Length: 228
Image (tube, rainbow, N blue to C red; front, side):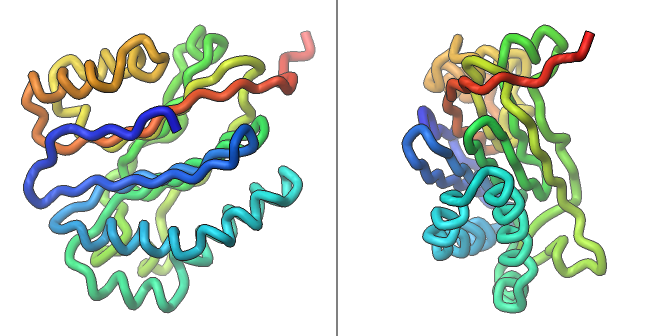
């Protein structure tokens, strides 16, 4: 992981993140934006970290099986009776974004309004860099989407384009700071350092924490192209 940075935190809002890596094989990143207290963020990360060995076992499988199984693994954890009981006991709730790059695939699971970005020249020529849509009124914790009859969350899979891609996950504090939305692509492309971006957030007095993880990967696999 190249960067894991955050701006000045604001009372009652807590960002957290973690990342696991198997060199050149895969990267697994989690970013959490908690409200009211840090308890929901701590619960989510501690729960996932408790199962880190399971993730590593799953990701040793062939690509298709690994992606299918990681999807099921995440849902099984967040819908388990043990996790739901613990959520009812915490103060506050959190948005959560989990991102996996394995071989030439990018996979994600999202509850709430954290964002995933993928920067590649071919995609940017079409104006595409955001992989997921921010969704409001979705959380894990005291108010919990997995307590609903039908939980709300989003899942996604994208094939990486051939060549260099830059991946970034980010909490939403940058949205409140003047000029930081327009600067974010430069950050994602590596044309702006993390320190420069955070200095801009501080200078424009962001009202919320911003945490991001960014890294780059080279995909040697051929990518899909139109037939004509």
